[in-house]
Length: 470
Image (tube, rainbow, N blue to C red; front, top):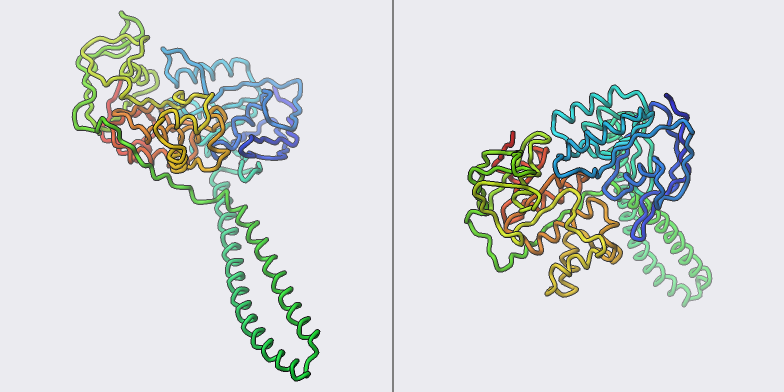
C-alpha cells in the first residue's frame, strides 16, 4: 500500500560540543530510494530515528500520514550468544518485512554480512517496491540501491537526485571551485600587499616632498593629509572585502579538507613484546553446551607480532572462537588450550564496549594511566585528534562511532596488550576514521587477531595469515 508524502520541517540537531545540521526541510514521496551519507558523528542515525518517530534531541517537526507502515532495522542489533551478527541482522530484517512496510529504514545494513548475504540483501532491495531510506558508508550498496541522497556536511543537509558517482563528482567539482577561488583571493591579497608596499614607499617619498613643499608654503597642509587618508581608507576597504571573501570560502572548504593524520606513540610497559608463542590450541572443540560442538578439530598457534585473520561465512563461529580465547564462561571448550592471561589481551568490538559511558574522554584515559600528568593525558589525546576542551570533557556515551574508535585506539596506544583482538571494528566507520584505524594498527607492536569481511582493510594492516572456519 502506498503512503502519502512525509514532510520534514526545519530539523536541527546540536550537541554541547558541536552542531550537526540546521533547518533541514524536505518531502519524502512513495518509492523514493534515499541514502543518508556523511562523516561519523554528523547525525545520520539520529535523523533516521527521528523519521521513524523516536523522540530525541532533534528540533523541528515531521508530518506523517495515517497510512504509514514502518519497517526498521537498527545499526546495533541485540543478538543472543548463539547467533552471529549476520544471522541477527537477517532475523531483524525478516521481522521488519513481516509487517509488509511501505517504508523501510535500514541503518548500516551490510555491516555484519558476508559476500553471499550482501548479494541476497541487494537483490531483495532491488525488488522492494516501497520507500527505502538507508544510512550507509557502503559504496556498493549506495551505487546499486539508491537514487537520491541526503548529504550531511558543513552543518547542512543537501538533497541530491542522481547516482552515487555523480554525487561524488559534484562534491569534487565544488571542492576544486572553492580551492581555485581561495587561490585567486590569496593571489589578489598578495598583489594588494605588494601594492601597499609600493604605495607606502611612494607615500613616504610624497610625504617627504610634501613636507618640504609645506615648509616652503607651496601646498596647504590639509590637502596633503586628506589625500593620504583617502588612499589608506580605499586600501583598507579592498583588503577587508578580500579577507571576508577568503574566510567565507575557507569555511566552506572545511568539509572538503584533507583528512588529519594520526601518528600514534605506543608506550610499551614492563612486559616487553617478545617472540614467544601466545596461543597454542591442539584438538580444540567449542560450543554453547557441553555435548553440542559448534567447531571441532581446532589446531591454532600464534606468536608475538603475528597478524592473523579469522575468516568464514556468517554463522561459522568466528566470534564464538574469539570468546573462547577470551575465556568467556558461557562458551564450553575442550582440548589443549594455552592462551594469554586476560590482562594481557585487549579486545575491541564494533560497539566499543570497552568504554565506560559515564566517563568523559579525559577520564577514560587518565583512569587507565593514573601516573600520567594532566599535560601527558592531553598530549596523548591530542595525538588522537581530541584537542578542544569540549572534545575532551564530553561523556563517551555522546561520542560518534568514529570518535569512540579513536578513543579506543588511544587506550591501546597508551597501554598496549600483548594480544589485540578486533571483531568487525570497521563497521559503521566513515572512510576517514577507517584510515585512522589503519594508521594506528600498522604501528601496533603486538600480535593481532582480526575478524573482518573487508579484504582491503586486512591487507592494509599487514595481515599475513588467515585461519578459515567452515
